[in-house]
Length: 212
Image (cartoon, rainbow, N blue to C red; front, top):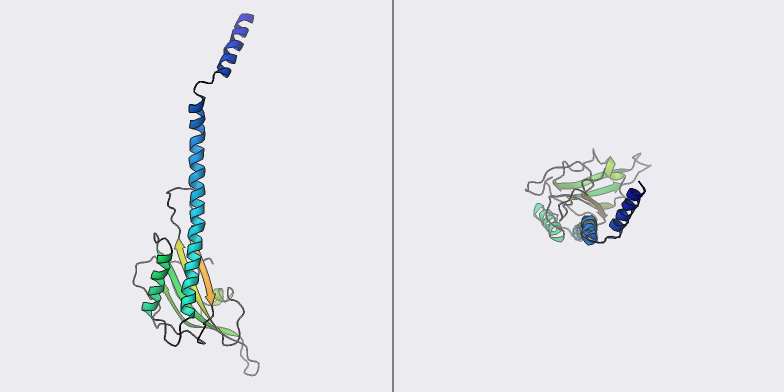
């Protein structure tokens, strides 16, 4: 029994000190973890990069509209904003865009009227509906304070992020929703199109307000 125990200890000691095949074993353990770490890091970095590009594109569209003068924004103009946005970001998923102009009317004690907001115009490509005086309440909560008869240009965009690396690690919250408001620069009100749908592209509809 003593010999068996001594022999077992000696064999275990020899096995523990044997370094043959260590590199192969370590590679088999570490390499999948290394690949997972690199791809996950790149995917998140690319996601933040694309999110920033979407935000900059939305600000660009808002700034361009704010510089318009007496001429009204047409469907052709609105669709050109749609194309500009897609050129500034990775165009691998449908873009949904809604352009609106809202006016604030302050309360008038003499006339006995309360403060209110009025939709001057609203046109969309891909959203389920436009803003109207009837459904404006969710939008009002997101607007800054405005002076009497002041107007605000609202640019809303929604675009799903499609990772370059096809992984299942990002399976939720992959839609970039932007809500940008800007005052007109040269005219009191930027006039808009009569239509409520400015593009003819096949874009799946989403809800009324992104992120709400």
